[in-house]
Image (spheres, one colour):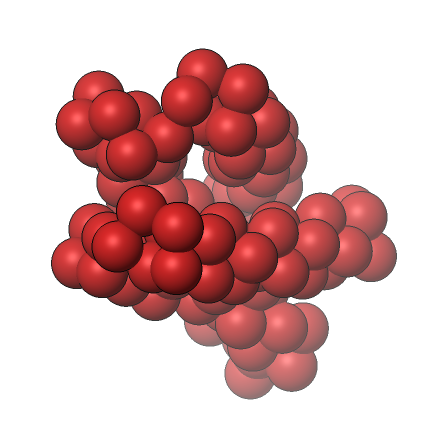
Length: 116
């Protein structure tokens, strides 16, 4: 499993999301959508960390599946922030690309673990 790679990427994604949240509440006065993004985007890395000390293979798969759902939710909130014009294309694209890459890595890990 690409544990350290995904661990580092999700931690950096969480840091970037915190910065984006701070920007949105201070510069754009947007507090509802950005809070949703903050919650799901920071929980991705937390679930990856939990998976590191899971009790069984099934537990690892469960925690990675939750991380997969959370990163997918992050994509949703990013798209919504972009379509409602809280994010310009450059801000959106950077975060969206990072989230998409994380989603692909998690999906790949899950497929290997499930033998798909």
